[in-house]
Image 1 (cartoon, rainbow, N blue to C red):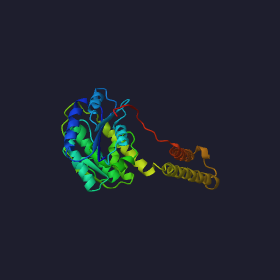
Image 2: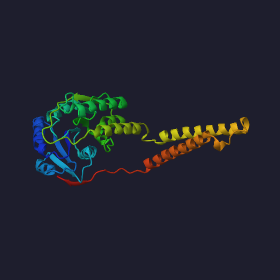
Image 3: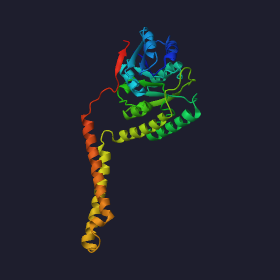
Image 4: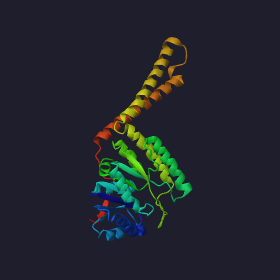
Length: 313
């Protein structure tokens, strides 16, 4: 199959028929074998009923989650189901333009790229609550990752199938798929300016807290990027430094008491004694944390963090 279009959604029943028709119209006549996969992330409206009706078309299929697990898990489920050599993701709220699908497909295939991210240069969102926080978020992501993208969190992206099959997507990390791809060895990453539309139905499912969560996820990703495979390199290093520092302090106060200031205060009356003791104990705790991290890493088993309650096909 040439192309898979993956659409995660939550309570978007009003937009689905129009969206599906727009996607089909944009790809008809392009000589592509394509599929459209909808992932209902625990919607409480009649989104799933609409998806089942759309699935009468052989090109359309859907998955329904038991409950709302978040966009990352919805994308992960879609990635596992996708059959296309190229995979394109987009949101279901009609703010992403379906007419961008084929140009993205052309760019990633003709230029032999691994990933092409959309760039909503002109946004129709709140300036205070979305545009400005989004610019700050993208600036921090560029600095931390070294990837020169203007819009990391744009919903519409194109991937080679090898990319989505070789990245580990966990909760909240959909914002950083380009970073995950780079960490997995896929360096041919580019972007395309895409159209962005006003929301036509319903309201946004994301609050201002998503930017706080995004920054925290960025810190987590940066740490995992450097020490995820060997946590002892981080915790063990800090623990060793602290233990050695505490040991040096204790040797100093012992030497001072035995040879330099024999009539001075008892060692236990000196603040340095307690500083050295606490420092060594904290160092041991860091060292044990690193050791436990290594044990957990070697004994963990991968499993899906979502539950599918129904499928259309």
